[in-house]
Length: 236
Image (tube, rainbow, N blue to C red; front, side, top):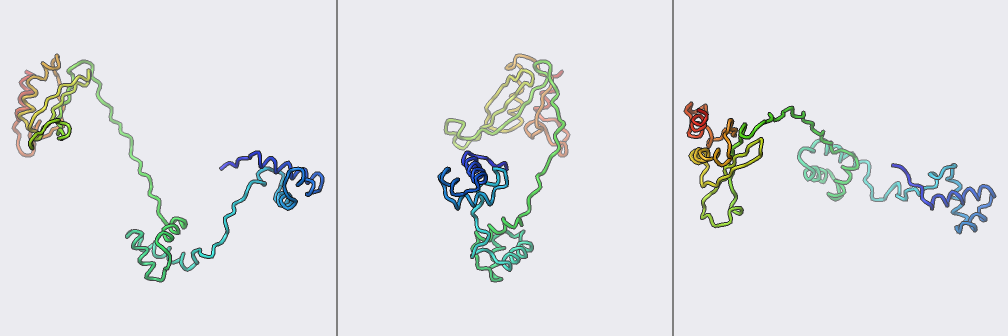
């Protein structure tokens, strides 16, 4: 981090240089409105640069209540053995072995000792998928059906679930929607009857998510349902 040289630091530098030039701390103290002792402290730290006069940390190097060496070794040993069980289990195991500190103190010390393993950030390969561009309306239409939540309906449905069938043309982004009371192939097939008329152009390709309301499971049966049957009829 780059240290910021303020006007106060520049003033200290001028005071120190004045004291050195005149070899008189008292004279520099009177001129710059400080004490002889302060000028002497600045002179002892001064190495010719303003950075040497920056305020130093007043944090004590030692504290009477700091963790002892045997406590730190205990935390390291227990964390290595019980880290998969969580911090609560680590604290219980430390207490059983004579640890008298609080849970918060233990957590702070684990963080200070950098015992917590940093999870590697997973990188996923960028998808190479690109959409197939469409060149005219009706070249590809996507059809899907979604559940409509009760709060979106606006009236008391009396327990009846409603679904919205949506058809979107990829080229023009025009859409046709219909609300039905059942998620079934019967409603999707009926929706397909008038979708071309609603769009105002013929449809070449229909894309779905192959749900049961659009197609039968090929592992169960090879028969075509009403939706796929109507698509074939419209093609011919």
